[in-house]
Image (cartoon, rainbow, N blue to C red; front, side):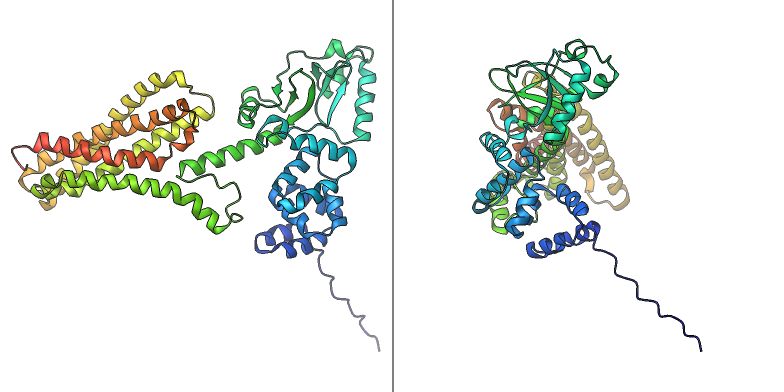
Length: 446
């Protein structure tokens, strides 16, 4: 009798980086560390580099000291410095001592800079050659630097003996050049550079303006002390955009991922602005009280208050958002305030006429169909239409000028948040609306 050999059950698929990535948000720190240990070394290294700095820090805090040393040493100095700055204060010394001595010295230099300065962003490891080297010598020397220590190569920088920047040359240009030519003959001398104390936002703008992949950082004596690469600039751009969006939403900068910030900390950052906006909105009630006689005589006017003030707030929010973004991109400067004001007043009039026409047509249509507004429907429609022109024009003007005022006073223009502009326009919108009503409806409804 023949027997069919039993087939062993299929072995379980190995735990992959994708599995861990999918489960990551739902895991606590200890579970993340256990899952990370299950990855192959290649997957683990790729996964670790893909994590945000805060997640890297949290993961290392949960790993044993030996594992922590391994993963700290795969990071370039600038990333290691970022991780240490992000780590809880009690772990920073341990993270720093997990590095080898040369890297620790480099990281200590980086930590001495402000976190948002070019010096704090730079990587001190870059490829460098002398101008008198031949092309062949330069290629061999770059290869030697790469073998001895990890260097970031977007361009090879040409330095003199005192480490002053003379020029730069790409690897492609080196390989294409004749072997016996000197580096001085093939290098480019018109090199964009940044000072070590330049703000990170200015650095990010520099990358966008000149389409750079890397930029050298120089000290006061013009010695090259490191380079900033496009991935660092992209991270800065994302960080700055996040801060601006949070400010535009009427809150303080959170300074941490939404799910990571403590609940009470998040409430505290939101409560200040919200309270200020609430106090501002109380002026709306004051304005309504001032015109209570007009409202009592013509209750129909109250029906259009939300329409009027929301239109002004929306137009102001549009204008302030456009101007703040234009400022961030360097498209608009302080000296351009008059041109912006003229442009926004014209836009406000056109937008107001558009909304006013829609409002008039709506009121007249409802009157024809349902007789909603009585014998004075035409003058009511005219009041709403004219008010919308005034309120929307004022909203666009106020929304566009407030960022200029804040910039002139030394504040961040993003603090001219859309909610703040909307609150300002709510109060003035009521004044404009009832003032127009007093003129047009005087002698009839009022």
